[in-house]
Length: 120
Image (cartoon, rainbow, N blue to C red; front, side, top):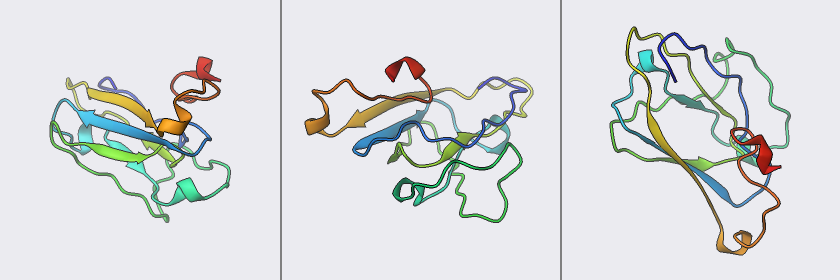
């Protein structure tokens, strides 16, 4: 995300079991560049995504501050969001991929529906 960007709303990348998000930061992350916040365990729930850009309080929220080249893996049903970038000039850059189980690889019925809505 670009400097001055706002936090994303809480979301899931998709609804189907068997997919894993993989984030690899290409720079060291700190609070100012907008790291990814996750709500652990929410992949096991069917609750609707609630919360707005200011709702980081009162729940089980983790904000891992990863170093360049670290890997963050999580079930893509996990509720998460990118936080706002309050830095003056640093763009948060990361490599992003979605992996799925082999038995899911022959179907094209779902993908990363949050970041790529055409996958629906």
